[in-house]
Amino acid sequence: MWYMNHQDPVMKHGKLSSEAQKAFDQYAASRLGNSRLMELIFKNPDIVKEIVDESDFNYYLMKMGLFQLNTHLYQNTFLIDIFQPEELYLLWQIDNALWFAQYANFTLNNGGQYPFSQRHLLRKIINDADSCIHQERHGAQLRFGHDTVLLPLVCLLGINGYDLRSNNLEEIEEKGWWCSDIFPMASNLQFVFYRSSPQDKDILFKVLLNEQEARLPIHTDCAPYYHWRDFRRHYLKKIDNYEKKLKKK
Image (cartoon, rainbow, N blue to C red; front, side, top):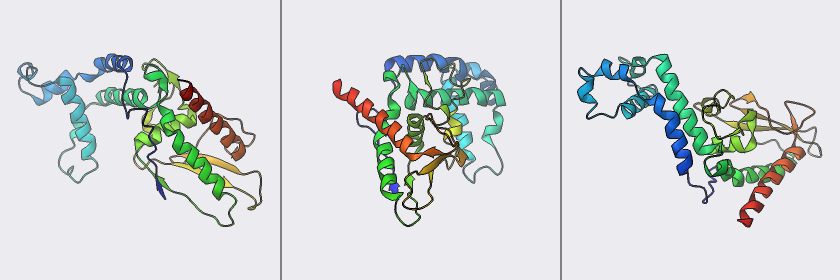
């Protein structure tokens, strides 16, 4: 059992470059306001505009409504019910874009390199697997972390196309990059290994993202299974190439 928190000290946690921040602000600007909600809650919304930031109020009231669902404080009132479905959708778009900009391959954010912050974790996963797959007994290794670890790891692995590289936040949803599919509550990533015996040289494995069989961007002749030798060769090379580039800078 091991807590996975292998952040790269070179990469600031969730930090956006000025260029990326500008692009995100432009994306979010048309989605944040909610005049209907202000008129619903306040008797005189025109006066409230002088003391309340409409965008912040809209966003954080939505967050409070979602958090309420995780408590016992919802017997009489559901705050989330004051929002219309299309309003919640716009706020989801903002969150989705922010997660992509901060932790995925958003090329305006320092070249979209943040997923490599989890390369140390990936290397350890590979090394630990190598040391275990030929043992006589069955077993399991468990690692625990946060969404800020799982998301860039999934992007680094390119699971289900989540290694998407883009400089346009308007296109990521259409291309299937949905953060809510990666880390719902109790999200998990599993590597499941298969062998005929401890002496088996050709170890197969499959990847499960939230208990669903997942795809990797490497060749396989036995999908949804992959040859472990192909996986380790591909990703160790990917990590090594990235670290060689770092040394040249």
